[in-house]
Image 1 (cartoon, rainbow, N blue to C red):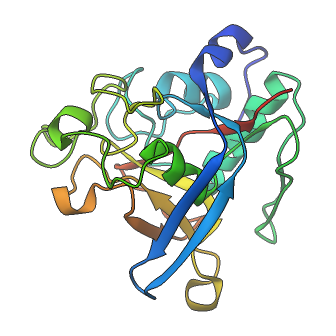
Image 2: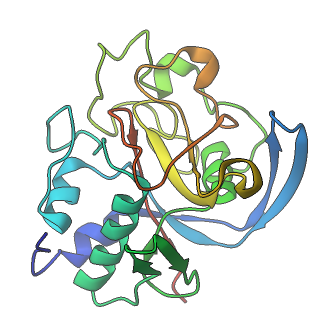
Length: 232
């Protein structure tokens, strides 16, 4: 794959909103475990990554539903990570990931100024916008799901955002996170969050957790958005 020579820095800067520091309460319904995570300030893309931006960075168009402003989908976790590195390269930032595809070993340096997937805790904290709520509004007003999506993804940013200006955190496409779900039970499976266009209401919540294989799993209701450390 060939990365395009230049990405407009202003376009990327406008994609992000600043997320303040705080604490989020997490829970695994399978194990009944609960825990709290402290969150540092970071920057988060206000929309899922669109097909237009994904193609600009990777020169690829993998999505099942085609449209520049539709969220990219049918991408694996590793493809999302590769996108992050290539976007970092294009803007001359320090890459967050070291990737060895032969051994499938991925190392994250979360201290760089490059782009990365959010941690699961960052994702939930940003979705809830500092609250404890399972949703940030009435579902039909904030999310595309089974009852209103017309059986496909929809353009990003058409539903109401949460209080921090993030759109489509729930519904439209699930979003990959950086974390391994449970290495003892599922090996290298990675987390994804948020619910998708074909999910029933009960699955479209800020607290719903799913997981799958980072290299082989891709589907038409799973995409991603990106984070970067708040630059001082």
